[in-house]
Amino acid sequence: MLLQALLVAIWAGLCSLDDGGIQLQIRKPLLAGTVTGLLLGDLEQGLIIGGTLELMWLGVNSVGAYNPPDITGGAIIGTVAGITSGGGVSVGVAFAVPAATLILQLVVLLQTYLSVHIHRAEADAKTGDFDKVNRWHLLSGLFLFLVRAVPCFIAVFLGNTILQDFIDWLPAFITDGLTVASGMIPAVGISMLLTMMLKKNMWMYLVAGFAFSAYLELPILGVSLIGLVFAGIHDYNFVQNKKMEESINSMEVEGGIDL
Image 1: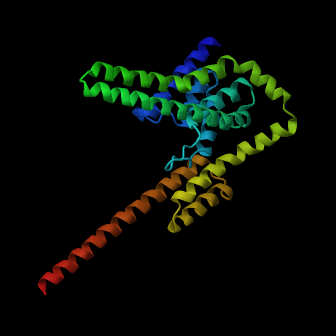
Image 2: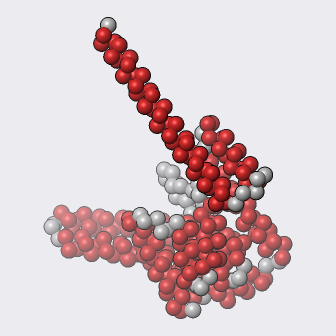
Image 3: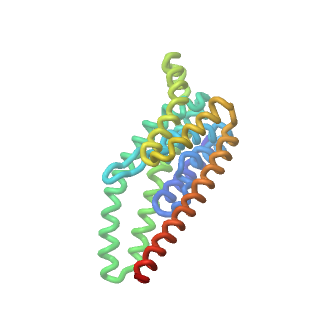
C-alpha cells in the first residue's frame, strides 16, 4: 500500500504541475482518474469513475474571482475512494466533491503564500541575483507539487480501512441514493455545459442525438460517429456561407468603384 500511495502521490503532483503551467491536460478528471485506477490495479473502475467525474465537472470553469472546486484532486481522491472501498462510482462521486472543495482551500492558501515568493523573486531580479530567482521559482513548483500530492498520499495510505468502515456504517438508503445520484450527475454536468455553448440553431442536433440513442438504441460510439458527420457538414456549410458573403461584399465594392 505504501508503494501505491507514493505512486498516486507522484501522479497527483504531476497533475498539479500540469495545472500550474505545462497544460498537457493530464489534470482532467478522465485522465487523472484513469491513471489512478491503473496505479491501484483497477483500470476499468478508474476509467468509469474518472469519466463520470469528467462529465459532472464538464461545465465548471473559473470565471472572474470565482474558483471552482479542485477537479484534479477531487477526481484522484474520488477514484481512490471508489476503488479501495469497493463502492465504485457512487462512492467515488460522493467523496470527490468534498475532497475537491477541501483541496481548493489548500490551493487558495498556497497561492496566497506564493505571492511572497513573487515579491522575493522580483527583489532578487532587481539586484541581478538570478540564481535566487530560479530557486524561488523551483521552490514554488515544489509547493505546487505537494499541495495535491500530500492529500492524495494520505487518502491512499490511511484511507483504505477508514473508508471501508465508513461505507459499512452508512445506512442502505444513503448508499442507494448515492448510486442513483451518480447516474444523474453526468447529465447535470452536460446541462451546465449546454447552457454556455448551446445556440438556437444547435437544438436540432441535440434532439437528433437523443432520438438516435433513446429510440434507435444506437451505442455511444455510433451516435458519436453520426455527430461527427453532422459537425463536418455544419462546418462545411459555415465555411461556404462565409466565402459567399465575402464574394458578395467584394462585388458590392467593385460595383461602387465602377459607378
